[in-house]
Length: 421
Image 1 (cartoon, rainbow, N blue to C red):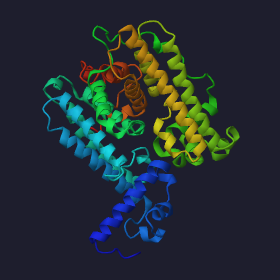
Image 2 (tube, rainbow, N blue to C red; image 1 turned 90 degrees about the horizontal axis):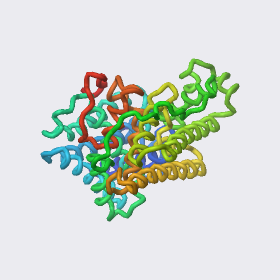
Image 3 (spheres, rainbow, N blue to C red; image 1 turned 90 degrees about the vertical axis):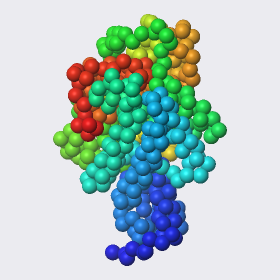
Image 4 (tube, one colour; image 1 turned 30 degrees about the horizontal axis):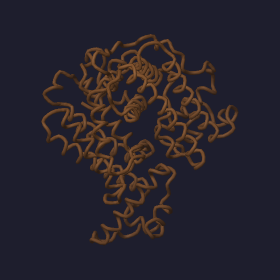
């Protein structure tokens, strides 16, 4: 085992350079896809030299995750000095936008995305999940102010998940703006998270028939089971972490059975993306052509997609899964499709602004926030263990679209997740 050098200022500087290079590559290729040799090359080291700082790639990935968690904890701590929920949430997004601007301008170290925590081995994953849960509590506490005391634990967990998920999602699209626009983007996003989309007088009607929408195909059988298993594993561990063996084991079948039903993993994952896109397209098409105001149709699309996420047919592939695809051309095509689907949600929001059911706001940012919440529903049961397709509309979709300050969900109707007391 190589002898560790004394932690001099030069050692600290080189270790930070290794962390920075690793964060960039983990974001681009996923934890499974990035190699120590690639990371070493980015900082002018040979692979063996990296082990002076981090013995294994998993140690390095853990350090990257913990450093990012520390950064978010700092944002939450600074925002918590404000005295109201509105001021706290606004400060949190403002500080996050400032951090992302500093990263874009190379005035702050890069931070890693949280896509692949489950790709870490057991002890490393346990350490990061423990720290992440503490971070979740800090962000959730931003909602605990005098005007939010009426909210119980279930509602707070669901709303904390909305805030944190929208914050993570912001990192995926804010670079489409000039850095000098970041503060304005943050203000508009915080306003939407707090107060939602609805214009005065546009009420929350709950399920309005969309629970009968058929979003998936009726193919069923083993092929569909492979698609669902692969989707779950890609969401958890990225493209490279979702091995043929793991996909097969998830549904208690053999590797031989996998190749009986599928030509290769690459084509199966491509089908997973197409399946997700087809479900989202179907929901948006039904909403676009359905009755009612733009507000009611936006709500119907979101409720239907969240219901699908939590049903036996779900989940959908998370948008972050695209980052670990090994094929550059495929990544570009998938990102283009994601952008187009987001623009379709934007159009539904614009319909509501035209008919007066959605208030004056930035429709693109509103669509991004809505898509972020729909994506995040795949993880909802981590924070609210008894979330179901039937209660998710009031529990989760309502505060996502009406704002986290809207009336609370009845805590007696669902149990809170065990990991976020």
